[in-house]
Every structure is written in structure tokens, then in C-alpha cells.
Length: 482
Image (cartoon, rainbow, N blue to C red; front, side, top):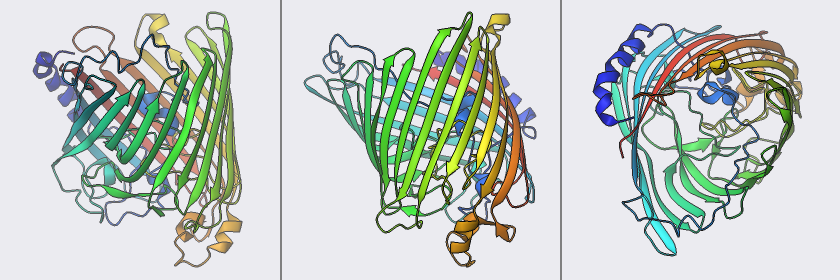
């Protein structure tokens, strides 16, 4: 979209946000006053529905064959540079059982500069992103829906600006190394982008696509730039709330063919756990008649080093089968957590590629869950760009009694994880949800999107995630300045 059209189109979008300021949603945020890492119903889930659609949870990104290296084709530091601007209007309404209702409306801005690379065998470059937000609605209790400082206050701040992205980078052939605050995509640190501004991570990353169809990735990170905050913070585990000194990963995605994808990754949260991820997906048939896709996602987690989060021996997997006929896709997914601990991941990341992580994660010890999902692309019915996803999930069999007994002292750092309302976490729960998404297909607003999220979750009193109802409206307006 051309920058000259911004003034003409921003006003009606801003007005739409203001009108909807009391009718939108969120996956949930920590309380503004001294947030607890154990408020799972307020921080987790939604990982399978980032940007209003089901993510490719196999995460196999096919690298295209290259006649020559990307670096050999470099036109230079300035000639290959880009400046992009993403405006986002974010409106959220969250009702949680046993907690205050939360409302927030925020205008977010991401002005991202991406340089090219210098010419020669080794190319050098740099990136920077200025993140800004203006709060239209929301205050104490809204948590990271708006602004929150590390101590839990700061929700009265009207506007905030900071460098959310900044890195130095080098490229050799088709391999890029970056150091700085950045967004990475892998089964452990996928950004949990469900607020006005996304989180970023500070560290080093490597992406290599030297072989057609194969994408290799590695990284090591020490801090995060959390949603709703303007200063770097230590990494923590999402459920245990344990601080990490460093998180590192290595792995890759291989597209054997357009129909077959494989992923293998390993990671280490120093002195907490080693975690391994594998995925496999395969499709057969033609969508004009019937196309079947099967998918397996698997995580294995074991305690490591000084075991700051205690003993961990957890296997978590999901099996999904989908059938597509023209505009309609129906998916059935089964998920199982094997072990006495929660399946956990790195905070601020959406590092849960299991199929049933929708509104909540269905990741309690011993828990099983079953999901039925339907997606329709209404382009086949004369409305190109409009998709609607609906789903329902039932979880049962959660039983954290073994770990609750180990952490029975209320002073224990993991007491709040395994105990709920005075009893060990256990029981069952369910949810339903719907997300209509419209992407503008042509004209000056091409690529802009409107996303409405509606979710409803109910659980028994001893389940870790409280019942909630979520309404969220997000409008994204991307602009390519040069």
C-alpha cells in the first residue's frame, strides 16, 4: 500500500476501533498488580490460531532451489533495503470466571527498516524496528493488553515507544546470521503475537537454505521484549515461571515434496530442561474432489542441569487428520500429555505446536483432548479474502496429584502450578470458538485484514485454566514505504 493513502484511510479504521472498544477479545493477560507466572488462564493458549488462522504446525518451510546464492545476487546495502509500516488497531474484551472483566483498545505501530547486504562473498547489514502504541481504552487490571511494567504497574500510561527490533546481520551464500532483538520462527519461540505489538527476543539466530527444500535453523537467546513492556526481561518458562539464563535450539524443516514435510528440532533451557520436537505431515488427493492430510506433532521434555523446575519427564503429542473438499476443510485432532508434569514452553513464545492449543493449551499432566474444526474459504462463494474457522475442543483426564504432592508446601515455587482452589489440578473442560478473517484483495488497502475472534471456555473448579469468554477485533494495515 502506498504511504500517501494512509491519511485518507487511517481515520475510518481508528473510528472503527473506538466504536468497538467495549466489544473485543484476548487470550488473557497477567493482572496489572504484581502479575503471577501461574495465572495460566490469563497468559497461554491461542497458539494454533495466530493471526486468525490455523498455523502450519509442522512448520516445514520449503526452501526454493536457487540458481545462484542470494548473496551473489545482492544489489547492495541500500538498493535492497526496505521500509515497512504496520498499523494495528487492537480491541479486546475478556471475561474470566473469578476475576475482573478486562477491556482494552490500543493502536499499535511497527515501523520496520530492513537493510540489504553489502556486496562480496560476505554481506553485512542491519535491521531496526520502532514500535509504538497509543491506548484508547484500558487501565489497571488490563495487564499486557495495554502497558505493564515488570513490577506489575504502569497501566495508566497513555502511549509508549521503543525499539522492538534491532540487529546486525551477515550473509554468506544462502545462510544468514543475526544478533540482536528479533523475531524468530521455530517450534519453541514462535512469537505469541496476540496483542497490539508482538514480543521479540534478544540473541543470535542462524537460518540456512543452501539445499532446496531444506531449511536449517539455530539460535541462542537470553532475554525477551515482552508484550506490553518497553524494556528487556529475563526469559522464563511459561507455566513454571522459572527464570532461564539462556535458551538455545537447533533443527530444521524438510519439504520432501509439496505433499510431505518433516521437522526435527532440539532445544535446551539451561538448568531447566532439554526439549525435542518432531513433526510429520503428508497429503494425498486433490482438493477439487477430496484431499486428505495427516499430521503428527511430538514434544519430549526432560529436566536438565540443576533442574530448577524440578524433575520433568513429559511426552506430548497430537495426531490430526483433515479432509478438504473445495472451499471446506474439516479437521479431527487428538492430543495426549504423558507424564506427571505440565507440558511447558518458553514464555512470550507460542512454542506449543500441538494441534489442540486453541483458546487454552490442554497440557495438564495426563490430559487427553479431542478437537473438531471446520474452515471455509468464502472466495468460492463470491467473497474472496473471507475465511471463517470454527472449532470445539473437549479435554479430560487431567491429574496433577503426583506433582501436587511433591509441591504441597504453599511456599513452593511450583505450588501455584499444581494446586487450584485448594486441591490438585484435575478434571475436564471444553471450549468453542469462531474466527472470521477478511483480507483485502485489491486496491490501495490490499493486504489489510480484519480479524474477529470469539471464544468461550468452561472448566471444573480444579482445572488449571479458569473459564473465560473472549471477544477481540484486530485490524492490520501493512504499508510498503520503499
